[in-house]
Length: 217
Image (tube, rainbow, N blue to C red; front, side):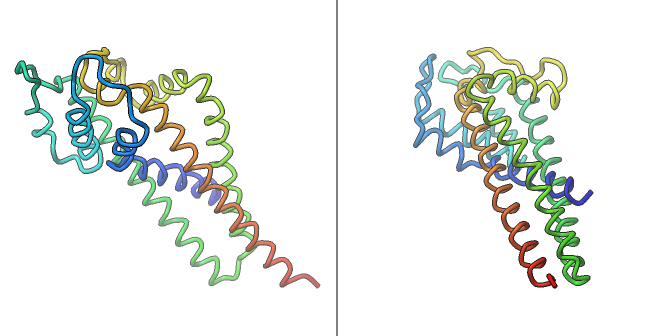
């Protein structure tokens, strides 16, 4: 059970780390997303994308997003887009709760396990959890270059109802966050989970090896 909880802690903690304005800045400043096909300037796109990312992190600026308009007076974010942003914020909030809860359980287990000198059990459980999370991330990361749309559709079909997440190319959300952005985000997320899993697996394996050598006859 502890191995599954530790795997969930890794998966959810990395997802929480990805919901950050710095990744938006990285995509716009370093990766350089393709220019908007409908004439929005790069500066405006970045500003609005940062506002949307900040909302997904904090959930306290929907009125500001609702007030945004294009030069012709058209509302930037339609009601449907704002509802999707709200749904996404609630999902990210739920993931943060899971990450915190699982992390707390893992921390408590490590604390009491060390106190009880259950080093072998701890190393095996943490290593197994890291292997589960890292293995899942590696498999999905290998699929992204060839079947990203499959993963993208499956993810949204699982976590969002109906077609509430489907938008036109002319909708602001897709103009700010095109598929290239999400492809990079999924790859970055899987890489983060994989690297975290490798570090934790090695830590658990090395600590378990030290315990075994210290208690070998």
